[in-house]
Image 1: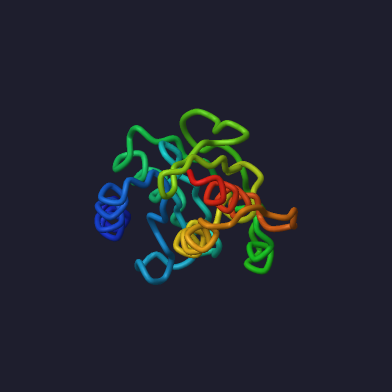
Image 2: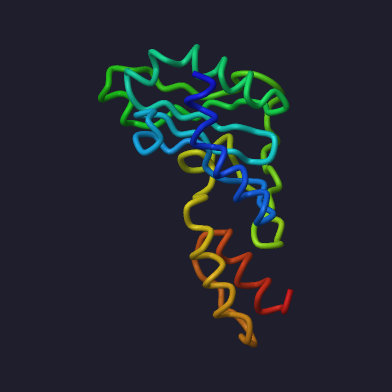
Length: 167
């Protein structure tokens, strides 16, 4: 199982290191040959989300593989989504191994430090797949003189404010 977890993440680990990122998706379910399994990395925290009965059945092997492949990372479970009920599974959330993540965990994205809530944020705590959209929005706002208050997500607001301030 360690090889199955490590194989798709090798490329992502390399890309993240090249781009100076500390947060990215390690395992993306079916596309990585692990249906129902999502694993996001936020610094030294791995956020595990098991969405199907088959994935839940593999929980011990997946956790063991993550501990073996990423010994310096704590594992936090966010298998607390409604789709699990359709599979007849209980909702699960909490630390699996290692320390409890802070309420707001600092991550780095495009040279800017952001705070994410992996304990109670939506899904695994942050939409890592929207990184390029946030960066594009930041570039468009670089020459802005001011911003109005709006109900945009906090990460997007932070990027817009940073761009407007020329940071």
